[in-house]
Amino acid sequence: MIQQFNDKIELYAYQTIKEGKLECGDSYYYTATDDYFVCVVADGLGSGQYAHEASAAVVAVVEEHHHEDVDTLMKYCNNILVQKRGAAVSIFKVFFGTNEFVYSCVGNIRFFLYSPNGKLTYPLPVTGYLSGKPQVFHTQRFVFEPESKFLIYSDGFDIHGAKSLLKGYRSVAAIAEQIKSDYENSMDDATFIVGSLL
Image 1 (cartoon, helix red, strand yellow):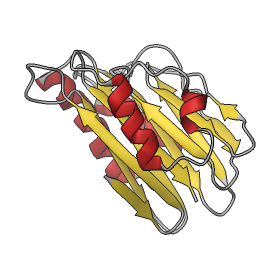
Image 2: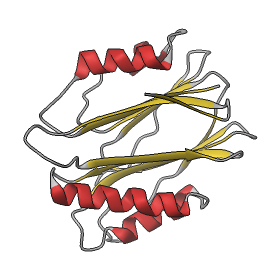
Image 3: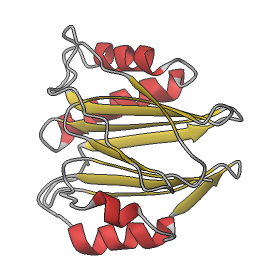
Image 4: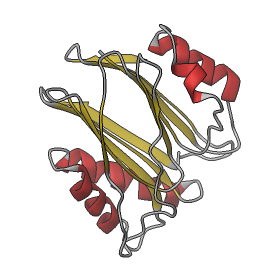
């Protein structure tokens, strides 16, 4: 389903559950204020109930504290996972006034930002996962152009050629439908969010 926030961002989120499981081990959350948009994707280790418990805890803490900076949010996420299964976590924040993008990730969640001039930004994640143990974060900051598109997805999707998916004047809905038809996977929990910065 397409959602739009403040005439500044348009996005489409999609999620499937591993075959045979009742709960999805992936969770996501996003919201926007007048000043920023924030999004988190969490992939709980494994699948089923305990993976869901871990990823849902991450999403809940970001929802409660989304006004904090990305580094602080990552620390909250790490702390909430003490004595839980653990999770790969990606958080990004888009600041509308400065056209800045702040991104941090630990684990195998992929993120691409594509600008209208053809530049593809792919910040490398920190390997591993959050589990409450001491963790180094690599938070990065980018400037983006209006009309840039982004794609973030958990490892349940094995997407190739992100640049060709995002380039041109295709709508967010068209990109989402192509990902759903080309990369559908029932062997793992899978989540993607594709968006356009208007």
